[in-house]
Length: 608
Ligand code: AGP
Image (tube, rainbow, N blue to C red; front, top):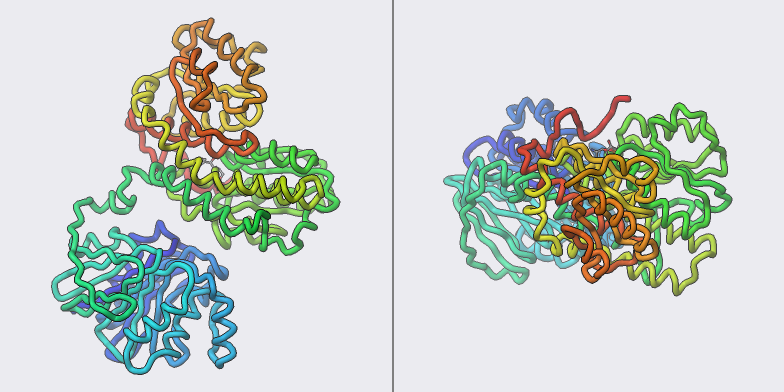
């Protein structure tokens, strides 16, 4: 999810590159860099950290002369977020500088080959092989070298390239990673998305996979993999700058809800091979679980609720007791933790103060810690004994959505992995479960598609005094997260209750027209939840039920319905939460709330 930008023209390149990178910063912000060409000299400036540091380092670009350049803002995948791993990368002969967004899947083999040929690597990135290949294939024609290089690459890449032999030219290549060319007057641009271009031009060309572009200040030429020129028709951007930043969505939250199929796929895909769950990143492999007598999951907020949802699969498939404890409680509770305890720490940001403190407390008591974390190189990731990344990409909206679903997904995969390691799951069973896990991205998409009525349901429920969420078992765990989503962005009073607990007190709150959102997605306890629905209905409640499309019993008693597709209930939380996220989003919208930046909240809670 890195961002790349390129400029050639008559103005100084560096300030323009820095401005473009700031617009792309939502895509990744652990390190950044620019390479600017002044006549035949390429100068590279890189920093670990934000664009603001790069601006400081280069005096807002003033210290880097030259009218041609490329820039990059990184969300680390291969190699820690360090200055060495930051882009642009230079060829050994200093002739080429490149920036890259994507992943080169065959980089290990290429790296071996290039090392054998005497090329020296400066970074741990997959990207660096590209710049050495360019040097290797360069025979006086950049375009030919690019084509030969691209032919060797497997994976996804949007590339920006400059060559000191051609001052005034920038090159762009696209394969499965977005890249857009911007047409100016006496200047031309490329960028990962239009956000970085709209301040300069609204005339753009969308590159297609397998296309190469050569840009000078007065011309753009696009060619295919054979070197044949392609005539492209420019498009006009009609979005305003802010909308472009959100990829056309009104809010980052909505964009991130819609990204969930892709985020869950990115989290699952590299970890299921031939019917088996594999975690290459666990240095001790399946031995992580050997001798473990208790699992503690600790986290805050939605990450804690992800733990609540994952506990069911973990306990069922490992038969090891699992406790889910709020990090802010655990740290002061004198917890019963020893070397036979595995502590799973969940955090999107990896910087949550309570979570870090709880984790340290557990380590001091001898437990092993396994972090499920999204931000590469974050504190939680760095201090854990084992780290498993959720590949959700940068999450910008304060209310987490794809962060939560990818966390639950990792817990599902760990459950299967540990169950197999403990000999509690056979090969066939694992195959069946991995088949189900691989279906989750498609099923999440169906959870979005099956609920076009949500905006009108939001109109009906948005001015309720309170909303109650009820469910049992995994449905209860999802109800907790559903209620939190509603609270934090719509400011409605929303509470989740275990449905069986209603008659022990909560049912006193039910009165005429009180909305109750009932989650009924677990067939084994459907009848029980149904009874609870009937109980609240007979006291006047208005029931909005979340269930399967063909669930006639629920359909006949509920007032309104939300649907999920048919899915194995052990793994259903990631499909169930999606309609609730959308409901919270639309209720907040009806109420005119600041959805991406709700009041009193921050994305990363780094204080106690
Ligand atoms: C959820 O929408 C919240 N923004 C919040 O509860 C969050 O999940 C919590 O602060 C934990 O954050 P972390 O995952 O970055 O540790």
